[in-house]
Image 1 (cartoon, helix red, strand yellow):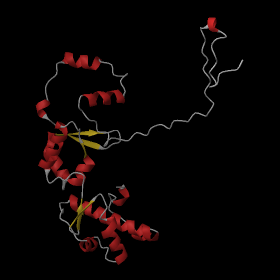
Image 2 (cartoon, rainbow, N blue to C red; image 1 turned 60 degrees about the vertical axis):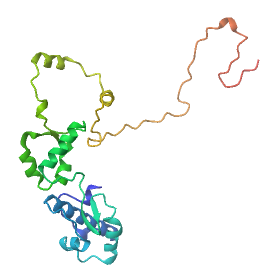
Image 3 (cartoon, rainbow, N blue to C red; image 1 turned 90 degrees about the vertical axis):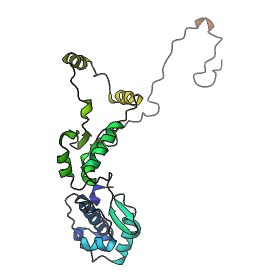
Image 4 (cartoon, helix red, strand yellow; image 1 turned 135 degrees about the vertical axis):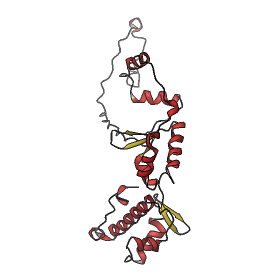
Length: 242
């Protein structure tokens, strides 16, 4: 879902939105952002639409907008869970406490799925900062090139001392000639999946189309000189007439 539907600062100026369409989506954005905020503070129970409008101080919207919210906007929103006519925020990961977070990271580690984005953890875990701090060195933070942080399970059973001689051998192996595609192909053969869905997306370069007729005709040297006068020329699709 686009980020403008639940901005992190929680501030909306509905009066500044022009037109009825802008007003409707402004109302939706305010509701989704509020549902996310209450989920993060631990209020995960479902609310009716009237309760939501009361808590977000949106009591002045008309019946037409309310019907749109119930039948379309909230019902089809990927960040809203609808249950028996009531609504709650739907994060990517439903995490109740720090133990649930540790189990998630451990599962990702065991399945070779890598880490979990901190943004997704903060979205789905109430009081996430407190839980992450309590886990301490049981998790590892890695910052991606796009500045987003990823959490990994720190499996202490895999920690061991590697002899310095082996470290030197490891560092001496040249990898400059190995591109990302070859690395990914090797990982797939080993049954290890990459984290492409959470990494920065790469934009493929636009290939210029070659103009018709721009390619030069390739000339081939013949070596059948002794068959001159016998072979026919099919280079143009039709045998040449003599």
